[in-house]
Amino acid sequence: MVTGTGHRSHGGRPSRLSSAAWLYVAVVVVSVLAVLGQALGADPDLDGPVSQAWTMLVLALLFLICDSAPTTLASRQSAWSPSSSATLAAVVLLGPVGALVVGATSLVSVRRGLDLTQRLFNASMYGLSAYAAGEAYLALGGHVGRPVYQSFPGIIGPFAVAAVVHVFINHGLLWGMLMLVPAAEPGQPASALQRHLPMLLASDLGYATLGLLIAALWSVGGAFAAVLVLVPLFVARWAIGQFAAQERAYAATMAALCQAVETKDCYTRGHSERVSRGSAMIAREVGMRSGRVEAIRYAGMLHDVGKLGVPTTVLQKSGALTEEEYAAIQLHPMRGLAIVREIGFLDEALAGIMHHHERIDGHGYPMGLAGDEIPEFARVIAVADAFDAMTSNRSYRGARSVEEAIADLRKWSGTQFDPALVDAFVAALRREGWEQPPSAAVPPADDGVAAQDHDDPTAPLRVVESW
Ligand SMILES: [Fe+2]
Image 1 (cartoon, rainbow, N blue to C red):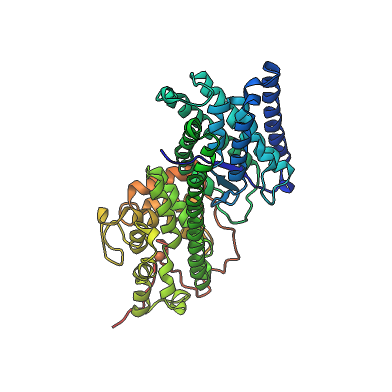
Image 2: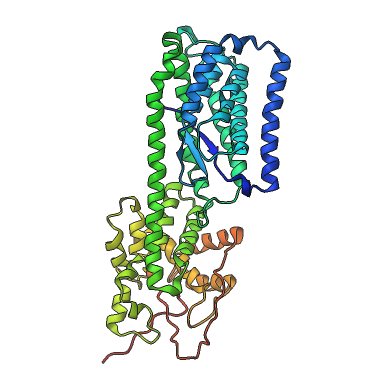
């Protein structure tokens, strides 16, 4: 239970806000002002909060200390701080209006790079989250004031619901904002935040319990409770920051390796990214849990990293291959495994990289595995890999249409591909669509360029006959 709670705050650039985003900010700000106005109208003297001015001041300071030192998340468009421990403690000690005021102090947060619009949005978002949490706490019979021994365990239910309300309104309002703000970094996968949302929600809910701990400690230690909890709060902040930094390091590692492969084999530009996307579509369609979907995303990105170990002349050769050259290409899954096997976070992705050219009928390489002997990741990547090869321009032909490629996947379903995964991919394609790479000038097919591609089942590699 000794965990913190978190906020994520908006950090996009206001100069790029669309009119819809401006309207959204205005609605959030007006909403918090309306809530405050209504509360003042109902209790013009604000007896409760004002009589607790010292408590409010200390909690506001605690909130500001946390809010002024957020840690940037993987998407860089949002940041996390454990500041909602202070607002949730205020829910218990001060009630909804006091919690709103504590949250709204984000307006004067000591954070560089925030302009007035961002400050207004963050303050309103925090104020609304805290107020709604306070109302939920009261509605469920929560008592405002310092908890005493007898308050437990009765206080736990109302507080838990208040924490859930707080976290979901915070995330919901921020989510709405991020939907209206363009990605801060070109090339940054827009789904990064989406992918980590369940983890962030779970950790926020876990850390939320620290708010109750602050309130309970207040009964014995007064304002000193706030000082005591600063240490675990900042440990929580550090841990989330480490996770985000690790995520960014993973992404950079992937990008560097993919860039290396595509530099060596330039006609497959963007292929890794698309195979990654297609593999994830199949994985979601067959119901893989989010951790495996993430792993298969990595596997798709890196499936051809072993091409780094194949001579460039062989990769780019347009004529038929010698036995040795053919063997060199067939070695690329093993070389890929050798290159990335020490990267700890890849786990199951390694099997996908090593076996992505196995065939269901056992005629693939490097091991000649058949059916269920082939790791599921490899069977998934094989489908997405072939599909992207067929729907991309190649030196010997133009891109085939999605429907033609689906027909070819079905044609080799059961011999080269796992039929269940082909069905899953087709279902996902029908629902989500597919963005083919942009067309490029394609040379005529009869100019002497051999039609061969180790990824394209319609153009298998050709080997010089030897005697
Ligand atoms: Fe490959």
